[in-house]
Amino acid sequence: MGQTGRVYFLNEARHVVDIPLKENGKTRWVHVPTGMIVLVAGGGTKNTDVDLVPLSAVESEIAPTSIAVHHHHILLGDSGDGVLEVNVAGDHQQILKSDSQSTTHQLEPGEIVSVTGSGNQMADTKPMEARLVDIHPKSLVESASGILYLAEMDESSDAGKVEALN
Image (cartoon, rainbow, N blue to C red; front, top):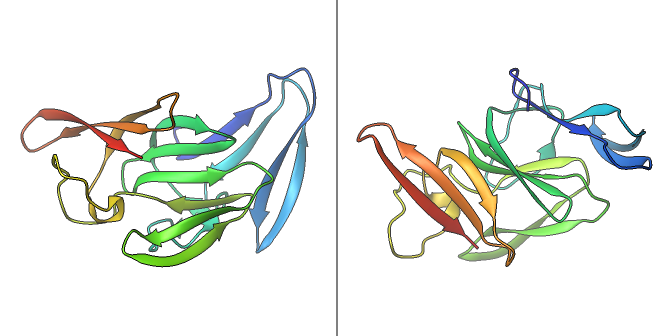
């Protein structure tokens, strides 16, 4: 992560890695040799908080505070938009528009989407739709079983809390 709201991929593998970048509506694959680095998200001006509508990751404006990786997808804690997901794989992931609707979107390679934190409700001990909760994570970690844990600090009360996203 950079100071300018950007996320980079550094190839430390012993082989070339292909990373998808989506710009101007087109996806191109960048061959990243060992020891080379490439921008994968941020630096743009598009708002990622658009009701689960995927956008180009490199054309989006983000403010990452933490990062986790899940099966070739990058999960970012974002100070403004909760948790963002970036697809850096060759697959097309279906994402549910909301828990109460069966509408889905495709998260194409090179795209980013806000998956939590654009609402105005506070999370408590009862499960609730992640999109409705106001979340500003300071750190993220994923368990071996695929549950994402988010740590955040409530600025008004100086109290910390940990939330789980399945």
